[in-house]
Length: 339
Image 1 (cartoon, helix red, strand yellow):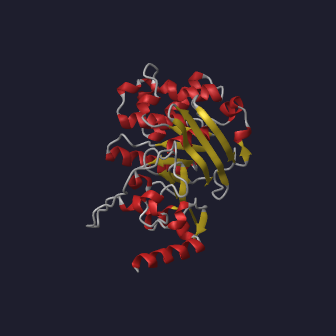
Image 2: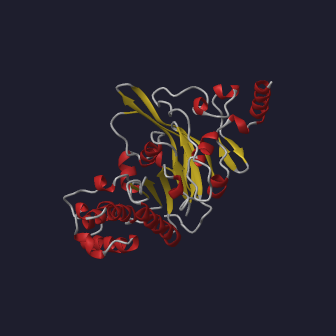
Image 3: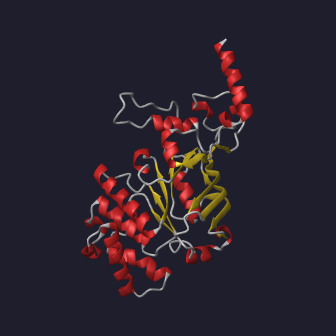
């Protein structure tokens, strides 16, 4: 296992990742050419509206694929190892849960109602690392302490726990094998504000003390700011902006990201939250060109073409506004409208 203290080393590199599904209505392009990197001891937060492909991206990285997959392609490297080249059995045995684990949405649905939660947390150690049950249960108790669950809860069932405790148990299950990366899919979406804050504090402490790396998938921008080192914005199956979290929250670049940030209520401002007109496009037949163009307050003629991902002040953004000829054309279009 690579040294987690090497903060600048690239842990995960995702290149042109594609995941399309067959449905009765057509092919759903849930993940459509996604590229990003994640460093060791880093948290990347992926935000966007519901239905933009965030959860499908998590499933694509972990190869948790349903039967109706139409196309699954691209490259995923874990510390330089091309894990897409591994067979399903090799990936299950060496990568899934050993090196990349996941905390799914709705912990109640993720936990087995007829098996004690302690046994469920111990199970990955028994299956993936061949550990004896007694030793695995000792490790489960250790993980319960780490995430703030009372030790005697190992003997309880999921229905006996509160929503917050169930979410902590799901986190303990992901942590128990000491993976390099944990993917958190909306881990606080069904919880009250106080419980959300407690869980985010636990995640920050785990990241600091264990050198853990996270991908946090959420639509809750306020909560995501607590953990994020970098932010990736996803729209209609594509990442449209990615960069340093502090700069993103202060000054997002992509028009969609700007609208998202403008929709967040702020305590110290009297300005009403903004909103984004229209609806996200169908992923069965996404529009040509920029997929956000129909809802964009800054669109111009060039937006009929698909923009490339370009660098802007150390950040990456998929928008014609930040390409020189695009900027010139935008200004010319604006002048014509003023005349």
